[in-house]
Length: 445
Image (cartoon, rainbow, N blue to C red; front, side, top):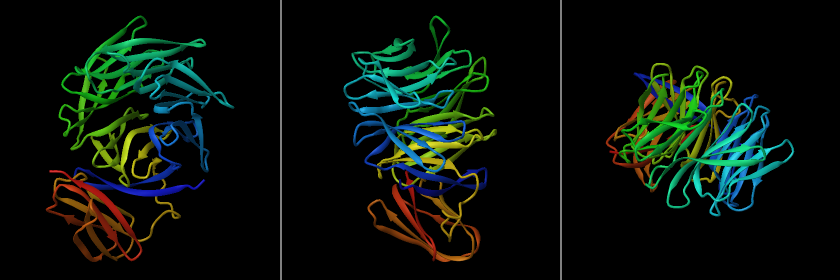
């Protein structure tokens, strides 16, 4: 198959210092409209595995990296299959996937036995969204999900008991809410679950006989919650406070053994599509999310002293569910969907520097910050040698707004300001004798 690879540069303001990193970005599958509702897992070789929805054929698909290429296959094609997929690998590295059949209804579960996929109908009567799959220490699958059939909205828990599946109601409400839930299981097989309702963000765990529930953040309308456990088995939750829909805040809550500590991670100037949380070996959180209007895959992590945010991919229209997982070196891997190109993408931090085969001569990295901007931004770039550099600014309709700059710049890092910009989406075209690229950015006042 054809393999496409991009190097995308980014920068981050940390105090007054600008840092730059590069990401390797690949198109995994572009056969039709594919890639919505993706979920990523990393095996013991640090190879990625991704489950995702094929919108064109209404199938559940699965991609795995072999070490040299992506292998793609259809897991289930009976009905409109594959929305809200959740993927985990068992101790042998075999994939397990939970997903919905829509619009016919039904929660399904697929497991690879080494030669074929075995498909279970877990809850045929439900019609829902937001699935989270986890395996206990015995390898038994547990699934949390919202069931939206009937007059009540229910957070459900399903688990396999022998050859059959059992289901139970964890929480139910008659009000309209943000649908999110996330499940994790600790080393003692205790189930931990987060979900949101009209009272805020909630956390519950199963004590062996009943679910014990706590309100984590009562001051917000929590949505897109993603829960993981730290090395001590304490729950950690990334979520979005959408109390003010057009000015949401990305938040992070962790249980310190006696109480919940809630941090405002980043104020956002537009809604986001989802969050996905991974916890590193040092117990530092790593969060990915799709940023509406900004149309980017964004990554935020705790450095030990502050939050650092990166634009991983700003090429296209990044939307729907994104997923993050860390490898054995705590390097982040991402799966996500580009709505403009209708393809499944995968990104990983480029830890070895720019690959000579992929490097485009003439510019080492380019970025525009802040993005989104409130009217003033800074184009920063690094040149391997002195060059003539031109900048042209276009609006979303393709009209030339201004020729920002055309000048001779020395080798190294230089910057050019963009000022007095109106609200809207812009494209900055940057050219040298050997390089041409377009950077997207948004101005919101």
